[in-house]
Image (tube, rainbow, N blue to C red; front, side, top):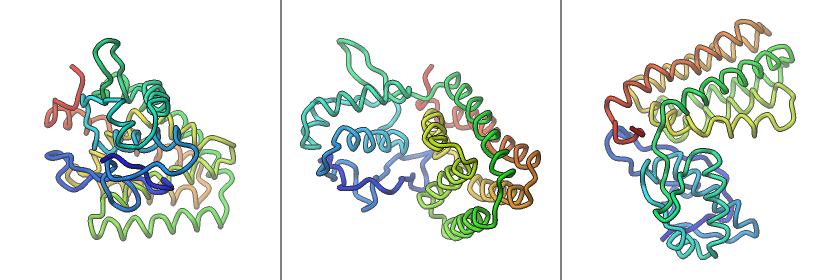
Length: 257
C-alpha cells in the first residue's frame, strides 16, 4: 500500500545491480513508498515529493502507468493532490499525460537529457565560480566533511548514501555562491538527468570516479582557483554523456524510441 512519511527528509538510491532489476525502496525508514502515509497538512507537496522520488529512483520505472485513483486510495488522499502532483511532474518532463489513454512515467529521452545537461553545466559552472571567489574556511570545512562521508559510503558500497551526499555537495556549492533560491533552481533543472545519474552511479567504477572528481572540485574551491573550479565542474558533469550511450545499449527499454 502506497503511504507517505510524516516528513520527507532523505533522498533515496538504487540497490546494487540496478542495470538488472530496479527494485528500489524509498523514504528515511527504508520502506517501500507504497507502505508510507500522508499525515501532514501540505499533502499536495508530500504526494509530489514521494512520486518524484519514486520516479527518480526508478521504483516507478520508465513507461510505467500511474493510476490516479489507485495512488489516491493508497495514500489516503483525494484525487486533487495527486492530480496537482502529476501536473508538476509533467512540467518537469518526468510524467507524460495522454488524454483518453492514461498517465505514464516518462521514458528517458536523449534530446531532453542533452538539453538538461547543457543547462546544468552553464548553471553549476557559474555557481562554482562564485563559490570559489567567495571561498571561506567554514565552507571548505563543510565540503571536506561531505567528502569524508562520501569516502565512507564508497568504501562500503552504500549507493543510496553516496548519492544523497553527491546531491548535498552540489547543493552546498550552490549555497556557497550566495544567490537566494539557486539550490532549488539547480535541483529542478537536474530532474531530467537525476534518474540517469543514479543509474550510472552503479555502472562499473563510476562511484569511485565521481568521488575523485568531487575531490578535485573541492580542492579548487579551497584554493580559490576560479578557472580550475569551473573546468573541473564542467568535466565532472560532462562525463555522463558517453556513459549514457552505454546505458542505452544495455537497457534500451528505459529510453524513448
